[in-house]
Image (cartoon, rainbow, N blue to C red; front, side, top):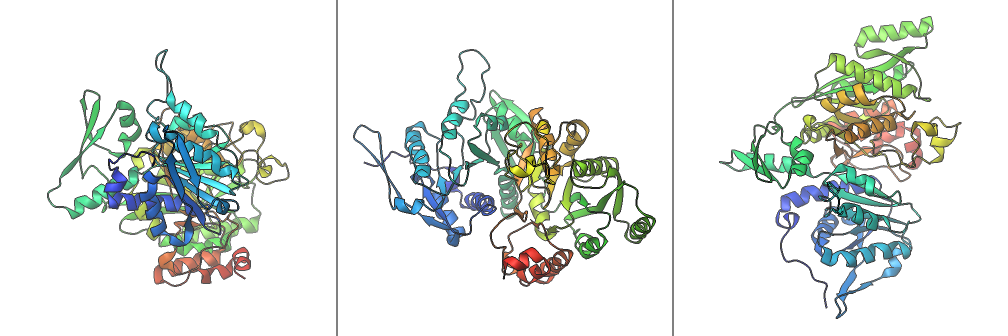
Amino acid sequence: MASGTSSRKRPLEEDADLREMVVSQIEAALSESRPSNKYIIVSHPSMNHIKDALVKLAPQSYSEVKVDWREFESGMPNIFIEEVHRLLPAHVLLLLNMRRKEILLDQLSLLYAIPRYGCRSLTVLLPFFPTGTMERVDREGEVATASTLSRMISAVPMTPGGPARFLIFDIHALQIRFYFQDSILPVLLSAMPLLLNLLKTRRHSESGVEAVAVAFPDEGAKKRFGGFFEKACMVSLGAIFVACLSYAAMRPISASTSVWVIITSRRDGFKRRVAARELWQDASCDQCKVSFQFVVCKEPQLSPSEAAQLDAEVKSFGDVQLLDCEEGYDKGRLVQKVAAGMRDFLSRSSSDYFMKVDDDAFVAWSRLCPRLHQISPKSHAYAGVPDMVNRTDWWFNNTESPNYDPWENWPFPFYPFHMAGGPGYVIGSELLRAVAERFMRPPLSWNEDKAVGIAVHRANWSGLPVSYHYLHMDDGESDGLPFTGNWSDYPFLSQHQLSGESIRCLHRVEKEGGRVDACYVHTPWLRELLR
């Protein structure tokens, strides 16, 4: 007897365009931490449309293990995993749908069982968190079922590869992440930029469509997602809020995005700046205005010869900015450099976005600009590639490590959700002002990207509706082989830990086409991996 499932179609089942966009974002999130071998993909029947779309998008990355979802006559689950031996050495991707309590026990049973069959790691895609609207108690007697489901999910056993990762889309309230226990890693994603892009695309392809109405089921949903629809007229219809939204109010595809970029560099990094400068000089285009500067610190005082060389570079190119800070990386010095760069941005720029990136990163502006068009800068956007690390890792607690971070700076086992600093992160100007003026204050991590993540976390906790956006970037920390192939298949918006010559080469390939791995010969650690 088959387990009961609803015959009602869901949006991702009916709308092929939206499904393709969401699946592409899922694949991008998975590919950042994909092992060198395939994921074993296991799916609840109600998620087969997502499973099929993922396999179609990247068939080389997935291999299916089927599950027989039966019931006893009593109605209780009778579940059997076929080819269960394949789970033992595998990295498993589990697709779950918990939107109805009738199928909740079935899926929780499988969720708990898979790690006990010895899988190497477990990633769970949970597109919808169904109890999200009941995340708090406003009066005595109410039960916060979001907390209940969070505890049930958090009980999944640990794998040899560490805690299970849960990919969750558009959770009702960002604060729900604090209900999850430290035994799992929730990764909160959003499909709202994809929806906006789909609406704009259809507006340009369908005649006679002048406006769209967006209905929010309650005031909480309006507060959470209303920021994506700027300049919308808000009409209250009882408990329903409607945004009467013209397409002109959404960010049009033809509009120009402006980005102010600080590129953290060493004062003696002249050769690297020379190699990377062409990339940044060519960054702007019709749809994207990029203002950039290499930032260095005034302190400690330079020798006369160093000062003369730096002064000559400033006069020749005008793109090196000396900030009021102390040069260096450890003990929070890079944090202070970036904070000074933020203050400089606020005093001199009206750009939509602030971006910080290291000078050993290649940024594919031909691809990053269109991605930024999908995000509203007024939505308190914080975008980048998540840096999934534990506060307890040895390099944050070893006094000999350049990443040493005194425990009192952040006395918790996990850092707040944050974006990696090396390949670059992007912050909307309104959020950046709040972060720089109110929340970049002690105690802060001595590691720059963690410090910014803590400040954004504080802003979010204070009530600012921070919207987190995934950008597919390579932080250069993977143990696997780098991407090899043609530029047309190059997956990254940014790639970190490259030599200046590799950056120059990749920029040339971006403009002219060709194989990207030919550029890796200029970066020793990549050259060794490809031998």
